Length: 185
Length: 324
Image 1: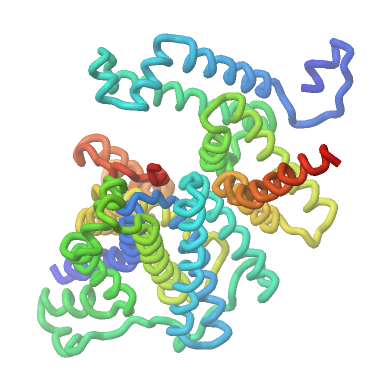
Image 2: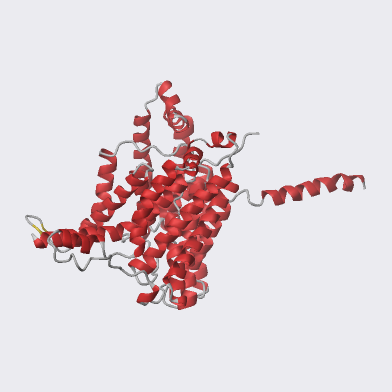
């Protein structure tokens, strides 16, 4: 990325960031347009909601599923673009390092919407890069400890989002009960 | 002839040993998923219980206490999963994934803190493990042609957990198919509203199913750490939880189907191990990587072509919200 922006007068420190981030952003917009603003996207969502209703409406679920899987495979292939062509410039063994499974968590935490997915993937990116920096700065903290922290973050933010709700409800109830008293005082 | 029998017996008995954790894992997943809770955390539970079993075995020198510890830890993980999925109605896939990561990290961190061996536990002596045992009469029939090696090499000479896993299959079939609990379990996975209308607690039923899942993954993890191997090493499950899940889907969420799929995975795996370095006529030596990929390749082909449609329990993955 720093090489691309240099002629434009923008100076960045050298990082592994490359043009695939632009591709990723473009794909987000593409997916958003495709799924929510085209006939194909409508058929796709209908199939997901109720295959029988889709058949009734003249949609062929098999065709939709095959196309969706092909698109999904094509987009998943772009992970290699970032890692191999953008960062390492050679094929490494197991370079995907669990991106596939993390991707599922990112998609679900982003509530299956491009905007949510961007936010969720930023969170995961911060977690993993922050973890690496932390392990670098403090040798007592190992890579595995970072994995534990990531697991806990996913558990509490992804799977237990309602955990703190009763506490906050109680808090807001207390505040709103006190608020009229404050106003009259 | 003798050689052929010997090789077949060797491969089949290796199949049983490889398939055991898969069978236990698949049955664990069966209980959970039939009740409507998707569990991709089998891997993490197996890993955590393997670590707990190996650690306790190293400290207490007792295989049975280690088994109890493995089951307890896997049960605790299952309880967290159940709390997130049932009580908090969180996303089941995310919860399972989080528990997998948690187990992968925690085992190594705790192992490092206690044993300082890069996440490994010390290798265990024989009395702290489940060792192969000879069934009665194994030595006596050893010299009988064909039947002798079959009984001595294949049926006898495994450890207790292998037999327990094989016994768990008909037991699960009976529990799920023939008992009142099993009927309700299947019903809550298909239509929780019906169960609720009948006055049965959906949450309690699902909690019990997920805890049963924890019990079985606990045994599976214990098998990996103190029966098949002599200690814990980092990431020792190596995707077997996911393979068990695949076997469950392969077997269409039925115990015998899952058993068949697990045995097939085990067979392919042990054939792959035996084929390493063997010269095939006309091809030469087959690369090891290709042989290792063979089970997965066959899975895709079989799943796509021959198994037919696998229909998941209808309510799987959907948190139950009582109507008001």
